[in-house]
Image (tube, rainbow, N blue to C red; front, side, top):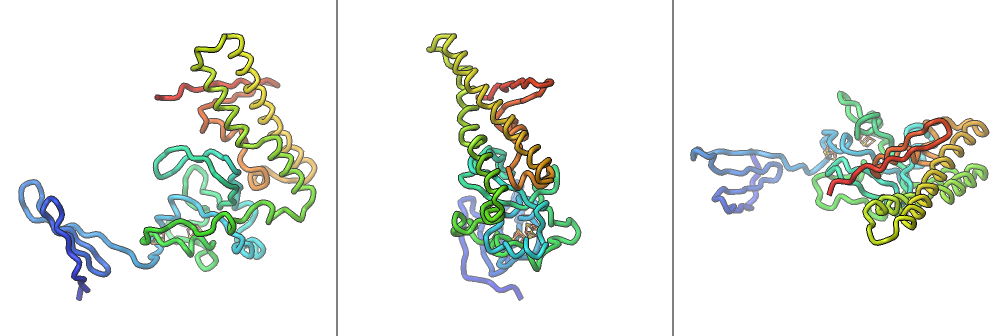
Length: 273
Ligand code: SF4
Ligand code: SF4
């Protein structure tokens, strides 16, 4: 028998909302006056429906390190989101900037679905799924991860003991900081709408920012090539060590960057007001 609570609300349109422990129902009237009843489930435990696995991929925490050590998750299955990285939300389509470095499981190419999700079987590493997957309760209003800043896994945890990689990551951050990349792009774009300054001055500033962006893109590309030649680090692992390529991120900022021989052409797309 359906277990009922004595919880009942009369909604503004006159319909009655009743909540039972496992199921809620809204009773009301359709446009031609006939009674109607809509049902929806309220979860109280994970039913492995996979909805959270197809919307985004999990962040790894320090306590997930054993999953890497045991080979359940490999270095090819994860990538780095660098501090300041532009990310398009799969929920509202807006662009956000990551306030800290994070290591995440890759999505299936062209989707937002976690690499370990199988559309027939569900999570293929369920018994060994990352901590945030175990802690996530979609039925709970408070779904954020507690203490993320301290608990998150970082590149330093993974590569801090490998001197050459640690230095390469530091050099890359020094020369290709995403916070500087973001502000150079902002300045380059804002020059298009500046009207007060003299034309010469505007051009000079725009050139400076243009050069900075190109320098960063070149360094980003060269260090990956160096890591490939010297350390045999292939493209699928370089996004863990150096994050996504700047060239790959550029369209999120409204830039189209094309390479013609040794030259770069940067096209700034008009931003819709
Ligand atoms: S936690 Fe995820 S898999 Fe579990 S019920 Fe909620 S949406 Fe589905
Ligand atoms: S690891 Fe498993 S539970 Fe976690 S998001 Fe991926 S498929 Fe879902």
